[in-house]
Length: 517
Figure (cartoon, rainbow, N blue to C red):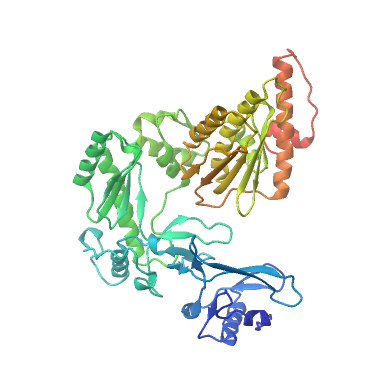
């Protein structure tokens, strides 16, 4: 049996060390608690052999102090060269001499990492929600929100320990999935999204999407919502609600209200970390957000899912029911519609664009770098026009790849150099237009002197990645397949070849015949 002991490294985790510490617990008490978790098998493997990760007992949670602070441009920092042990290589240690506490709490939601809840994510009606949850979880029989009397709003500039204490039970909503070493981010300002409306609990406000610009239509929608809004609920009117009738909006509200009521019934006996309100499935939630008049076909290869999708479209967009089709062909659907090839590209660094150009996408901890290359584009007399054409094609490809890979954070794009200011402006406008379809919040800056473009994109979930080996294998196969396809197209269309025998590696044979690399 592995034994837990206190080494010299652990003994340095004290006040002033910059690490989490305890003023009340001894290292021996912490070691005993860790040993109990180890004996129960409640541990994870660490970053190297001999290291184990255990979750401390909840009875000790309040005895630890985290020294993390929020820093800004006014925070004074101090750095020094230190080393933890005599045998170690020195490193630069940076500490904040002054800083404000994070004003946040870590919430146990049953996930391996605690969720992060900032004071600003509590919502003004946090006390009402907290009291309501306590009432529902208690012995009270009357647990309807419409009869609940709301409490005063919390202080906008207050401290989280003034309204939240250890052991409180909360209803929370995940707004950001766990990414890398960070746990999920949550909020207690609860909202439920429908096709036309978003219902916000314990609110009285009515807001209309900014994309609905017609003043008369905005006033019409506000007045309609005032007449049908449930008690103690606020409403956000989505863009798709424009010109919708009161019956359609009322139907949406009733569906959302029913979901809330069913969730509250589950809340009475729900365990910590248990979901009480959520999406039915990913397909219908996507359709709810993106279905519009531009849709020509919705093809589904699963019978049960086909029925669900068709029922959903019929319910909210009856005129488009016929566009939902069931795919029953033996050939893989993704291969027939050219999706398989696009999926293969998602796991590689290189993505081909038209005219022989390509982009390289590489990620680091700090940012994502995208390099645009002209590749095998034909030599032309006007290099400026050729570079502009490749850059414009690349902008469309990059915007699409950011969405497909769900890349967030800072993105720096190194376009092919352009000299004319007018061309730089044109490229900037094309990139903005290409990114306009992106539902994630983003900011695009104009090109710099060195033809670099900076983009920030909201990060809400883990970026789509594959293993390095798989990515290299898929990329090599995809690039070879692209070259073969372009060569065959040239031979058939430009040189009028009638018959060609293609001899390829079994790997490529599988790709060309059944769509699997």
